[in-house]
Length: 256
Image (tube, rainbow, N blue to C red; front, side, top):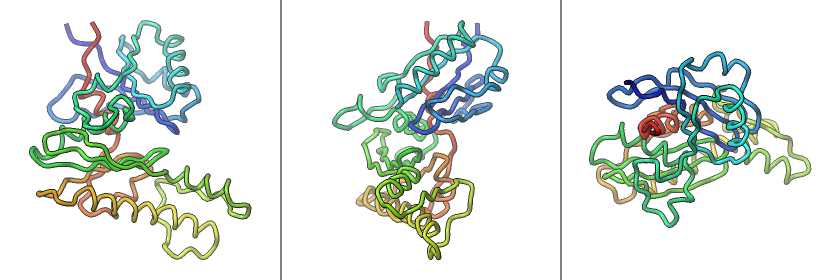
């Protein structure tokens, strides 16, 4: 008897991603489809019609309690036969050599699980991810999550400037847009330049410091919608979408 299909969920502070997977294949599993919607809102109406018809198991990585509650209620209403499992760090096949493993964001750990599938054996890796925050994480040559750095994401920084300065406008970056010109010729353009190129500089500095003393140098992986354009400005970076969902799929073991 084949195992139930997996519906993987990544509930972040800003966005929720839902993806489903077919039978496991060699290498990194890739979702058949992915739906994205704002965290804190109900899943879109078209989601129910697009999900697999058979009973599936939902495995959820969440850093947002209200988003988790909304999703659980939605599944109970629309797919009552589907079990939902809220993952913890103990469900992921990776050791976290940090002070408090249970307090590490599951999105960071799940993405690191996926990186362990695709990185070169015996070579450390750095993982840069972006959502509400930008994180730069290090995975050791033997696959251990070692921690990293967290800095505000683009929207969080823009909100802080808008809310903390009386005359500054709210200037947001659209992930698919081309990078802003470094020389902003009006206030909004200057803010967008600072948001984007400031993040490039911060991430480059963290990459250099987290790579110091390692031989060979770590392979760099980038994920997250806000970093598609940023990845092109990080030397040797490989952009891989949906790494959190893929890591959940790597760890998937059907509930008894």
